[in-house]
Amino acid sequence: MADCRGCRGAGRSRRDFLIAAGGVGLLAGLAACGGQPPAPPAVRPVALVYRGPASCSGCSESVATLLENCPTPFRAVYCGPKEDVRLSAASLATAKVYAQPGGGSVESAWHRMREHAEDIRGWVKAGGHYLGFCLGAYLAAATPGFGLLPGNTSQYISTRHASVRDTDDAVVSVTWRGARRHMFFQDGPVFKLDAGAAATVLATYDNGEPAAVVAGCGAGRIGLVGPHPEADKSWYTSGLANPDGIRPDLGYDLIQTTLAP
Picture (cartoon, rainbow, N blue to C red):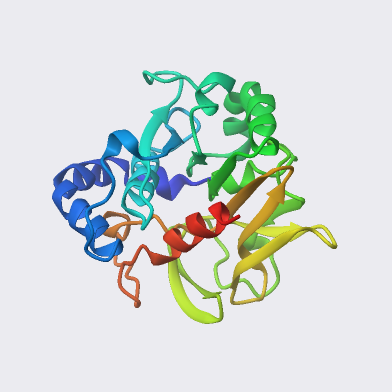
């Protein structure tokens, strides 16, 4: 079963890199917004980002950075069992976005997250926006998971003609809105959408399987991605390199499309 071990393995270096690159992140945010200063953090919409035992070290921080630097920036607030903000119906009510980052195995994560399933599902169906990255995308399904996806997920590495067959860190080729791009990957899902589902496939793997989707869920929307658009340069270890360079634009597209009316 899916296990984001590679995400967890580089956690310390990622956390250190994010702290050191804080100024760079601010400049990236200004550039992404066309040179205009972003809204002060206190008045930005809130994005709750799960951080806890169902995520991997550094993964939550990378997702938070993506949300804080996107063209319409958010105020990222970590939630979890050891955070100042707990994940609950009350905290979800303060947020425009809830993000579930990468982590360990689906079974282990679900054991820790299932108590929140009803709150998350109810919040999304009432108009909330769920973002799932790798493990967070697996958890959007129902076997097991939050039951948000109109369909199911399975491992890309088990699909026919997959370019990667193991759970090691890798770089995969995808077609994102018709353009060939490369993304960091570690045992992410494909999405098996129900016939007639109200969903948009943003990206496919090189074998044609969906790699990123946006779908309606009641009055809300979900944005899910198997590879990691939030990956910064600290993720690329042991000789891994992205031939496109490390660019956050695919993550921004996922966020903005999920939020689009």
